[in-house]
Image 1 (tube, rainbow, N blue to C red):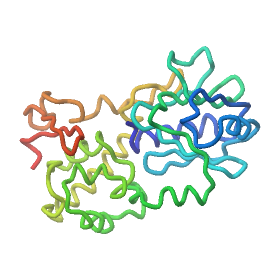
Image 2: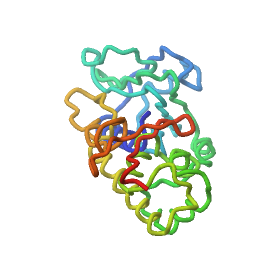
Image 3: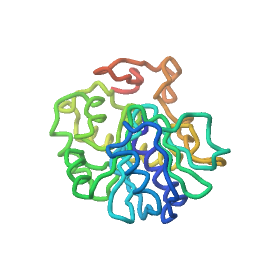
Length: 269
């Protein structure tokens, strides 16, 4: 599932590719991916423009010239492709937005969605989300305050979107590894020094992942050399049984609250 770095990569690249360009049409093959009537959606897109693209947690927000906001959550299996009909991958797109000869394909929106909301509805929709980990104002003391609000283990807390926004299975494990802390540790057991290591690791991992385009490998467009470059840089995620890059011990995979969790039992404590 795309997490903060993947959606931020999409945001940055799509801003350059489609922001300000007139939309010439749309197509909907799965009406359930929308929260409005398909014909209404097509009419609303045609002749409209996306004037700004924001990200909140794992969502993208497409601000339309007419005032509405398209809220995208790709969920499990969702991704996007931008290009001509000839360049399009051989996959079914549930929603397509046209930009002349180029199109933005929303692929795999079986669990995900592209919903249209007013600004006030968006504000209400995101009211329960936790802080953005990379916001300049999210300082270490504020992070400590968030940590002190829960008593569950680190893995469960990091993937809880009401705790912090945008972190999921992959980056929770990567953050814990860089911090040298077991993801199974209970939050109240963390010392202040460990809390600080966790805070620094969180910023380091997320910024590095954005720099290298996240871990999802499907390119956004033909010639895209950024998207997915972080996959090869993952230290623990999906590396069960491989030697730890820090100490050489085999990495462990465990189920934690129905989520897969990867770590090194030797050098994380």
